[in-house]
Image (cartoon, rainbow, N blue to C red; front, side):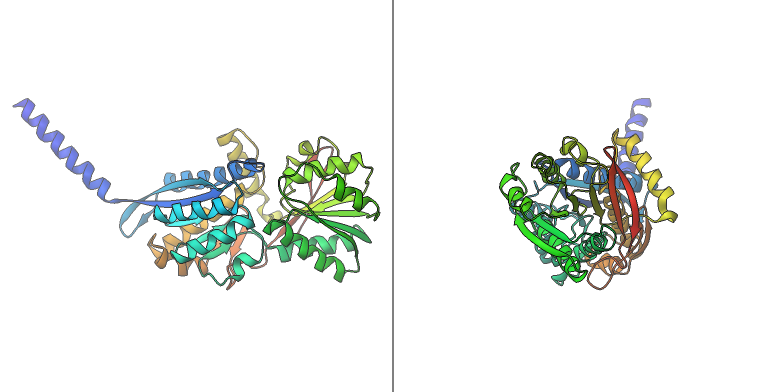
Length: 379
């Protein structure tokens, strides 16, 4: 009798468990960044930001349409390669993800965005800054950082008005990001009266800049602007020193990392480098950012490298839109996503009609004694 009751109890438990599982829905959030290659450190930083957000959401709990939600992160590697990015995008659409956070680079974000658009999947990039991304007219494409027009413009004006630069050489790595930010810098620099004495090109993998730097040296620039990432910018700084080029060095958020001093092998002088991060918190938001950085370090045993806070906010913004729509179905929560007004770790997030940030902030930095230090937050 006791055995039969135990079997009945077990059956009842199984039925109850099955019922609970049936009442739970899994919401799949895709994340894509370069987890291999020269900027894998930045890709992993992004993924960590997404994992933090997913863990927080699941700990708090959310109910949509009367069912408890379990958020699941599906992380993929695009190797910062456009072809790999489109393959990964197709993989995520086949997996029927509810939304995508990514990609990191403009050169991967732009081609992948068409695939997400064709499948009706909302996409928020935490770091792609090329204006073309949101100029394609895709209703599901958003970003939570300022674009190259804002970033390059701010750097061009700073070079002219604060650094008093007169003759500037420009180098870019021919990626969508590098070329985009360099083009926008040139527009603002010329408008402010700066003379562009050289325009040179490299790629995002070469370690040798001797030829282009030798050509630049002959032009005697007082500033060199580089459009690209820290993995190239660091070695370029080292070779500038070897060739005796004593100019200031400027770039966008791609070089604006804690790793730049080590990647330059200690070649940068104090105050030599000025860079801008496409985002940033004003005084009122510093406590929230400090708390995020402390939580990140506790969880992963490492410092935030660059974009992790923006990835975290991107996930939270997507989840907030789902909550307001009471649905994780892309077609239902996309209208709410477009109407976002969310106070995140990185500040107030609101989108314009294209999916760009309204009044995106920028943070200007320099480096002293091998450490990055903030100059100012500007709009």
